[in-house]
Image (cartoon, rainbow, N blue to C red):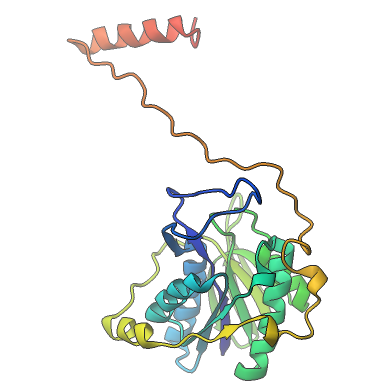
Length: 268
């Protein structure tokens, strides 16, 4: 089986900075991590390979040069190969433009790596929370899709997927090729081994730039190709801690709490 996993390097949510002019995230100099939901997608692919050793896992990311760090982390955990899509004309892309660029990259990679049986993505990125890129890639590529997957396994007819539901989980089947987006399962992703970590540090990650996509529609990429318009962004101020109540007895503490809540007109 040939699986492509889309991953994104996202800024540490405690260190977010916003460009006041473009209203986009400032990534330079900000600590970054692999998007956690993409980590669940990679783990799902690795679990398929546990049962089917001939499975090949390729990871793909779009971003600046520093995104190679995230790709090397994926190589250390489970991926066999990694590719980065990067270029000035791709900068500032919203979810629609990003999904279009990634769909073009996937088609380009299939010329090198063979057809992908499945594309796995995290359900959303924690720096945007739109949950749009995965489903949009599926639409660009004309693939059937299942979202909010918890687990999946390979069957004779395709993939069997446990999908998170509002009231109860669902067991679904989907034919190949397909696209699946993953949410947090009941288990944690595996850790990298020392051997894989050393190999990942030595790995050369190919970069797909604008020159590799001569046929791409440039009106659909970057800021110009992004219909989303962000009017304003801000980092919420940190809230101050509440009042600590510590009287001589529990009864006195309760009376003090009641008094404060009454003064604030929270209770009457």
